[in-house]
Image (cartoon, rainbow, N blue to C red; front, top):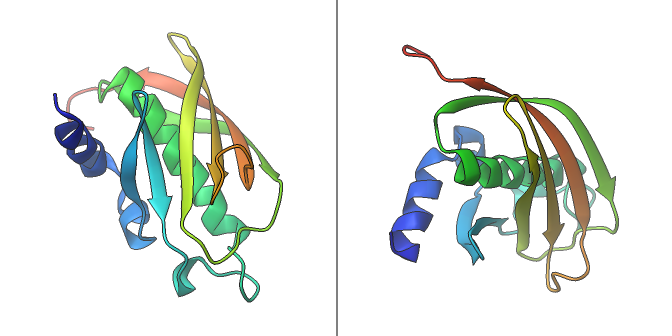
Length: 140
C-alpha cells in the first residue's frame, strides 16, 4: 500500500472527536501515523496556549492510531489506565503527536505517545496508556 493510501486508511478510522477537533494524519514516522492539529479557538486554554484536555485528546488519538496500525480492526480497544505528563505550555503552533506500541499481549497493550510543536526532541506532553484488548465480534 502506498503512503497516500495508508494515510487515507488511517484517516478513515479516526473517531468523530478527532475530526471535530481538526485532527488529521499529517505523515508517517516509520510505520506510525503522526496525528496533528492547528492551533484554533477549539483547542485554546488560557490565552495563547493549548488547553490541556485538547492536548490530552491528541495524545489519546495518536496512541489509538498507533495501536490500530499494529493490530488492525479485529480487536476492540478500551483504555484502562492513562498517565499524562505535561512538560511545557503548548503555544499557538501546529501540534503533532505519535504513538509507539511498547508491549502487545493477547489481552493488554501498553502504548506511549508524545506531542511536540516545532522540535520533536522537545515534547510538550507525553502519555502512557494501557489498553484492554478483546476480539471484535459480529454486530459490534
